[in-house]
Length: 148
Image (cartoon, rainbow, N blue to C red):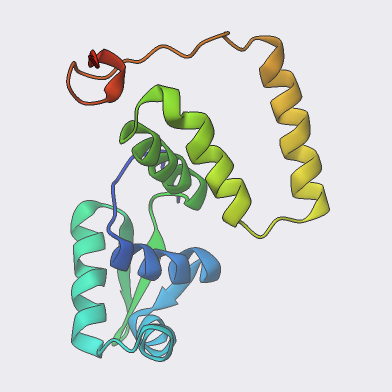
């Protein structure tokens, strides 16, 4: 059962989670086979990552005979939401538009994706502020600095 919890995972752990999300339930051997070929990681590295994800509460595990089966305790959507929040929390609010524009520029998008984005932006523009306020701590961005 996928729970609605927020867990930060590393880039390497994200690779493991992608395998689990794709398969629903998966053995450690299957995770290892997939990631050994994709990432050129060795089995002990992958087992360490799986163990960390279990400790963090991102994965549930149970045994079937001699096999260990893993399932996600956190949804892919929830993890993407946390990841997005993390990215945006690292920059001044005044730069959010640029960050999002850069993502759109770099992403492979279908016509349907683009239409959905355009619709979302149209709705967002109806209640958008004229100027996005900076919420950074003084000195963390250029907004509060006085250039002479």
